[in-house]
Structure formats: C-alpha cells, structure tokens
Amino acid sequence: MRYLAFLCFCLVTAALADPALLLDDDDSFRIYGVHIDRTPKQPWTGLGIYLGRGYVLTPAHVAGLGFWRNPRVEVEGRDLPTKVLKDGHFHDVDITLLGVDEQQLPVRLGLRRLTLCQNAPWVGEDVVVATRESAARSHVMSPYLLPADTPAKNSAVLPYLPETAAAGSGIFDAHRKCLLGIVSGKIWRNEIVQEDGRLVSGPRDVATYFVPASTIADFIPATVHF
Image (tube, rainbow, N blue to C red; front, side, top):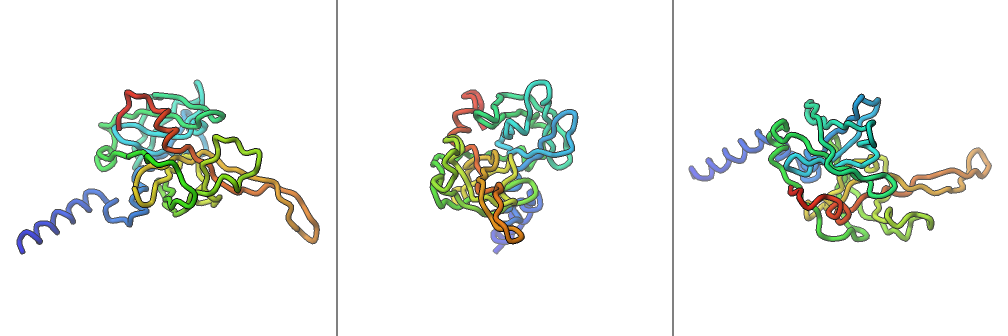
C-alpha cells in the first residue's frame, strides 16, 4: 500500500515538473515546437522543431539566407541566439539546422530527445502535425493525386488543411511517436469553379508537402547526435 502511494506521488510530481505529461498523446508533441525569428525581427514568426541536445530544425526559407538570417529561437519567452550548423535551400533541401546553448533551454525541453522515423511515409499513415500552439491529426496522401507537374522532391504530402500547413510544423508518426518530417510548403492546382453564375479559373490548395525523415537524416552532419 505504501509502495502504491509512493508511486502515485512520484507520478504526480513528475507531471507537475513537466506539464506535457498532463496532455493527451497528440498535444504532448507540442513541447518540441519552437518559434524562429530573424534578426532584425520580422512582422511574422517562423516555426521549428527541437531535436534534442541543443539542435533545432527549421525550413531553410524560414531561417533565411546570407546576411539576412541571424535566426533566433524563442521558447517559453526565452529568446536565444543560434549558430547555423548547416544551410539548406528552398529549391533543394528546404531545411536548416541550428544550434542553441542547451544550458539556456527550459529543463523540461532540454532533456528531451527526438527520434527520426526509420520507415518511409506510406499512404494512409496516421500522423500528428504539431507546433508550439497546436496539434492536429492528418494522414499521408498519395502523390498520385498531385498535379502532374509536381517536382519529385515534393512527393511526401498531406491533404491540405490550414491547421496543418504552417511551414516548420513537425509531422509525427501517431503510433511510433517518431519525427516523420517537417512541413515545407503547399501545392496548388488551377481549378474551374462556378461563381455568380459563371465559370472562373483559380488556384486551390490541394496538399502540404514535407521534408521526410530520410532526407533529414541524410542532411544532418554525421557529427551531430541527438
């Protein structure tokens, strides 16, 4: 009986120390979300994912290029300078790896480590798309449903929904709890619709494409371990 009481006490204490333990499975992924700001600060805020050991992943187009970048990571009100460890490019591999001082991170985040998924995304796979503010369910979409001119590198996709389309959102395997990818951008096609009794042609967002874990693994330098 005393053992059960002690165990309950430990669980409650751990939950109070780490509020993520009080969240449901989907919301628990939100702790890995961070904000990315350029210097000087822009009117918009970018998104990124904390991998562990002071490493942060964000889309290259969010971090910026050349002297315009100087990205900073904001988490729980702490605005931290970064070191750009490896640059990608929007037209190639749209991710950039940043490093922050692990000592300056909140303890409950700094101690966490993400695992990259080993499996390639498969059609119909259940995923959780998470940022610091939200988590939403989605699934991997068939690339055969994309416009014919879609580049092959953009073939890892989810159905388009505004709540899962923000660049820098993390995509997590809903069952294995590993990082399946990071959102890069949207795919659209021209469609003809009826408006005010006449047919008009216009763009419609149909999918969100992401950089898959296999590409992330190839991109990250061999000296980086998280």
